Length: 152
Ligand code: FES
Image 1 (spheres, helix red, strand yellow):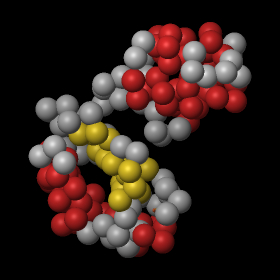
Image 2: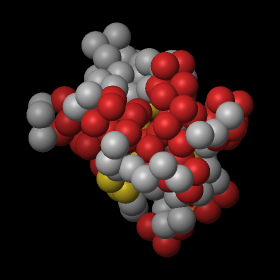
Image 3: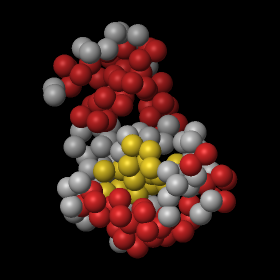
Image 4: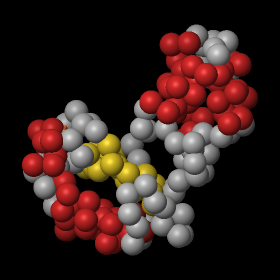
């Protein structure tokens, strides 16, 4: 979808800034916001560019650099940590062959850590794009990655 068409889905209100940035980021196959995206959002909503940039750099779900097609975000907050998130993370690093903050050479996955996702009852948790996956074990995390690789 063209960026102009994305913008026009939103009212010209500063309240929609985060939703608009999400939509612009999702429209990019490499899951990130370009400088042009930030300028478009600022101009469309009548906000200073610095305010848009502040929002993008504050929230970890936004990126200013190209990422993989799928974003794997492992919760690193205390409840998940105590429930075994680090062993899940180590498994994912090994399965993907990358470290946190990196993208696989085939451009399929980016691995990130995040703070509490608000679903501590099913810790440890990761998000795969928009989907929350809880009650993780290293084995289950590996199976999720393999299923995505196989197109599932
Ligand atoms: S601590 Fe991980 S979801 Fe809350």
